[in-house]
Figure (cartoon, rainbow over the protein chains, first blue to last red):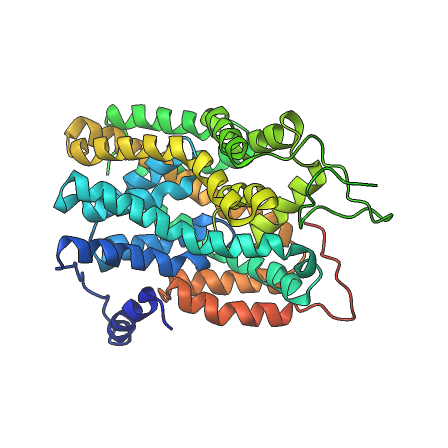
Length: 213
Length: 208
């Protein structure tokens, strides 16, 4: 049984082999079909969110910007920043992506898409987590678990760097903006200042026209 | 000796075989919901994990610190956002699937509703030039935050060249060859697991 996202991959691979990027394939379905496709996409991704939700960000970008054209690149960057700034887990970004997917059909469908998408991205991993919790005492010393934990760590590391580069690219900022990005990166690592301050200060700079895209 | 508390599948058994004490009476579903709601509201300025520990372990005394830390281990190991998984762990600890869903609902209700409102405002107004200018700046900061994620965990792999090689290979595949996540994980995952398969009967993890 292949999740929808795997099947959706096949045309991308084909055109990749041909040396081109996959074109936008916006959904020309009725409203309900649109909703189901949104949910199906995120349902298939849920179990691949290793090392926290951030590893899926590149995939989210590909799906929402390149494959289904729900959002423009700068909208994706905006929503990422919004999800990071807002209180609560940043994985709620998926709700915003769903909202973007449904927006052309009106705010009502946008909300429905949003809740559907968030439910879809959380449900499989939650079910697996419940099973894991109940069986942890048996799983704890299993070699599978040790190998998984040790092996997926470096892969997560590579993915997170790729994600960082992708977000930077999507931010599409000018030179002062790039300086701000690098500065924020260093400050995030060296200090414990809340990221909200950085975003607020950068927002001011943006409003003043110092940073633009 | 009778045990008045229901035994959770996760509570560590003490050497004598009696269930370990985990503090006050375990929460009902309603208390789970309210407790996680409290965590979400307290963490409005940030620090969700810290608040989660403070409220679940110290204030409400639902579980011991050791049990909470076990939860962190499981949450990090399995797919899903860490904070979400922690809420699921706390809920499942007492009431299985229902508990997990209730705890999740408690944690997400307020933040998600708020984010939905913000989202509607965004989609309605984001094209306004003033708002777009401010967002251009915010996004630069957010990009810096995203960049820092990799660096944050880089340190733990310093002495492990194979790990760094794996990471570098993953990065090149995603950035240079635009390999999608799912095929990458399905190919690289088993290879990495094979390399790190525990040998000689040891099950101790290297210190991070």
